[in-house]
Image 1 (cartoon, helix red, strand yellow):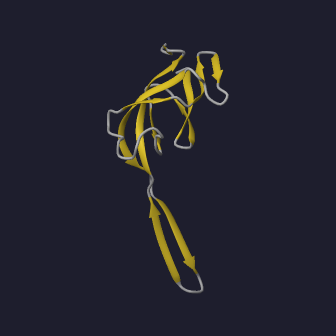
Image 2: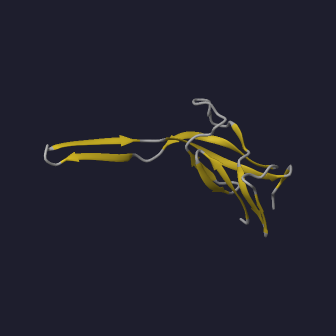
Image 3: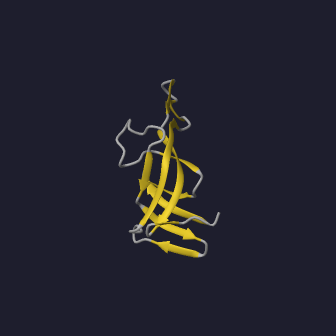
Length: 118
């Protein structure tokens, strides 16, 4: 694939390609609990689009660029284990945390109303 986009979502920047799925922390426009499987999403915070040999860079975002996709299912990240040890007191505490994620698939990348399909 020679076309991709870099988007800003969930506080991170992702390099996305059509037909692939990604796990993100949350989508800003969706309320918690609304992310049902099959929900169509449009991401307007597109930082960069690369198509063939052409690269479009936004400052900070591209104004006419949209990444469209759909939510596959909610999931959780791998557990992050935090251990606290007080050596002189002989106390140990082990905590775990799992981040809620949403898995989505990118259907298309659009620039100026045109789908960048091969």
